[in-house]
Length: 233
Image (tube, rainbow, N blue to C red; front, side, top):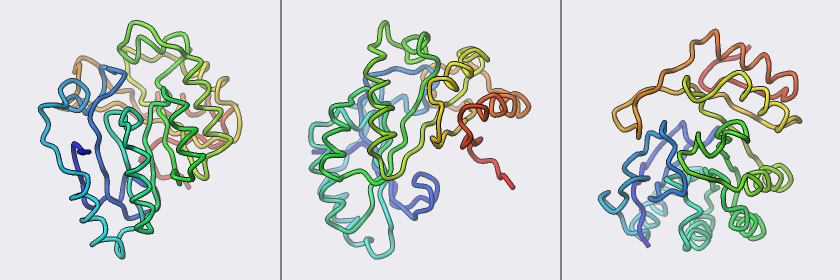
């Protein structure tokens, strides 16, 4: 088993924890605004690290670290994910998983084994526009909805989040997400930012004013809505 990237220390990827981040290659989506284009489009060209080497490093740093964030790509595509997560848990480290939620059966199995301490699921946009936003021809939205329900009921800690992209998302998307996720969920608005590794660098960011309008609309149904990276009194 190999991983496609390893960041030994992060204060950003696992909220409230000093963590390391592990990246897996491959994804079942091809979101045009994704910053990890190499992991999605050509993971075979990305340098790999043996999983055991990563685990050995984590063991050496286990007294300093508090957790590990597993991201991608899409980690749930890796058949050895559960085994890898168990080995991390055996080191006494908490595990945060980033996922697009398209493999609800895999997520359920991970919850059944008690391997997820925190999960962040990307909500790509309004359900009727999901396939287009994900860069695929078609999508079984029921699988996404199943994962949302599963996470809300089973996750010890979780967040839903949407990266808003001007040219892909509209005010109607915001309203649909608000109706869909209505409840006491933790939800983050993330603003798209251009970068050299974006799959299709043809889009723009929303202004701060527009993001605040989105949050205002979402607060009506999701009271725990935040703009990522913004301090709130």
